[in-house]
Length: 200
Length: 431
Image 1: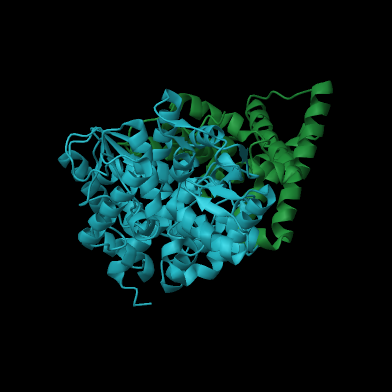
Image 2: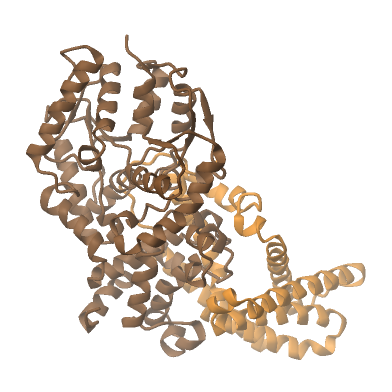
């Protein structure tokens, strides 16, 4: 468990480093006359613009979109459970059953996304080893979290899996944990400055 | 391709070193290779090849960034797909970033993450420009603008002559010997710019705007020294040349002491001067900049001009220029103008922020080596137009006009292509 705590610390420090680097670089100064509302556009960027109705990437690919959404919810839930596990808190009874079931579904969603990446020619061409490893690690993380809920003897393996994931996270595409939020912000800023968003 | 020297590689990588900022860093690191952007790209829609997926284009640039700027890319490049900046990569970059992207930005708002894909493509073009790999056809357009003051290299005497006969024509049309096309007059409210295609091939669009200015009793002038609204260096990625072109228009507005610069109907020109220009020259403009679309809508709203929608009986549809709409936020104004000026207006599907690029953007019209691709992707637009059943296609962009004229012939659409000023001028009621 302590190895996992150290891995978590390394992961957080690395993510914080990426965040600080972003802040230090700052956004480019825009000398043009602002036409729109940046605040409203940034909020829209994180809300309305993310709606499946607004995105072809969602409404043309509803099964993948749904799987992706579940997969990410599963990741957040697994992280929360990892922190609870560190404090020796575990869900019991009905809550444990629901959590287990949900994580099973999200883990299968992750597996589905991985299978899609392996089987589709277009995705294979876009992918590098990091894409497969990241997808695999997060999927295993979720499934291990689910299994550990019912089998405490799996905790040692669980913590090894979590540690590998946490140490790997800052090295590859899982860094989008940080950059996703920055991307939505910059997009909101850009479209807001020019009065493109909010799209009403 | 010439030898890729160490010096050239160093120049190319400058984009990731000297010019790095939080926005670029973000978009270089955010793509997760989900590939869901594929259908948002007109190139992929028209010809579903893997190389046309927007994520592939992003990865061309970001993989180089990873190779030289990240820990994993330096020590385990294969793990994260980091690529060397070598001859093969450069050839692919030229083919895809110049030849297979109009930087229309349609993929951006549909990206599951929010990666500004067209921004990354622009950065890739900047890299290529730094290394001297801008396609010669595009570079020659930039050179014409730098050397002669306009991208079509129109001599000043020829331009002045054109304006003189257009003025006579205007006087005849409005039956007023005092109607004018003013040149180089100082202290006017508006300095109006033109796309050089207008004096060269479409002088009637200048007449149309002059007629509108006459009806609105506007205080305006044209410059014969610097009237070119375009900035093809925005497309080539050469920031120094882009700044030179923007600075020249800036200086002329200052020189003529105009209060407002009105940008002709030109999507990329509007973007390049209004939004990118201040950043090229690192100055906040002390004057107002408006697109002619905004101005026409303003005239109609304020009642400074009156139109009769019964004059244009044919059904009119609208093509939204990407740079004006997705990158400029102007999509309500043109609809307001058409709803006032024509009897039957129909939308294309999709339209507004989701509109499909006609294929003429991104400098494609200047790069003849990619003509076949340009026409191929244009079929999507041709089908859109045909589906509306319209007899007139209005578009506030001369690049789009050119592409639509070619599509009209190639796909036998049998429509008229008009600018908004032409539509308004046709519907104008002169009091």
